[in-house]
Each structure stands twice: as C-alpha cells, then as structure tokens.
Image (cartoon, rainbow, N blue to C red; front, side, top):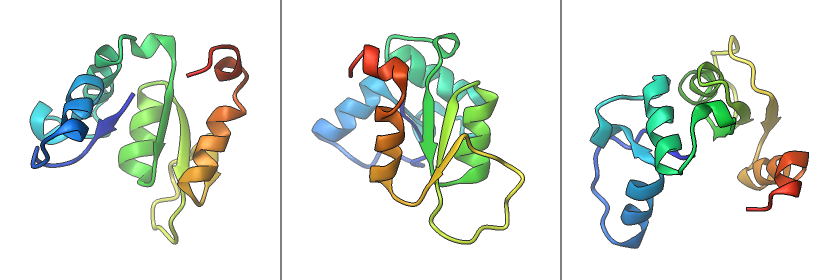
Length: 115
C-alpha cells in the first residue's frame, strides 16, 4: 500500500500513473494521514484490504506511524533525527530507507510470498 500526503497532483507521466493506480494521494482524495480512509483507498487500489494486514513505512510519527497503527498495519519509522513526538511507537525503527526494506525482507510472511 502506498498512501501519500502529496498535497496536489502536480506530477504526470509513468510515476503519477503508478501512484494513481496503486496508491492514494491525499490532495486528490481529499483526506490526509493519519485518517484510516486514505489507507483503505490505497489497500483497495492494491487489490487487498486492511484486514489482510500490511505495512506502513514513514518518517512522520503522527501521520505515518499513528496512521498505520490506526489501520492495524505493521509500522517502520524512518528516524531522520530529533522529534518532539515520542508518543507514537513503531514496530521497527530505522534510520535509512534501505534498512526499512531489510525489515520487510526479513518478514517470514513475505519470504513465503515474494513480491
């Protein structure tokens, strides 16, 4: 799933078409993270539902991690430095995107069902 908070659909071309088919842009949908509705739209566009489980990887504790937890998703927080919001707790914390990918690759469920 790929909920995004891009405020407007300024992009065009292949990347935009990919997001519009398998993700959810808040500026287009009219709702923003952490609203579970954005996650539901993204899941539906990916051919699944939130009840099937999933992951939210993000760098914003309130929008990404709280939103993912509200949607009952596993969460990976990309910690990019000091933040005042420590109330939200992610399932995993990393400092780089490549580390987040490694967390997913170590997941036994994904090993049985490769992407």
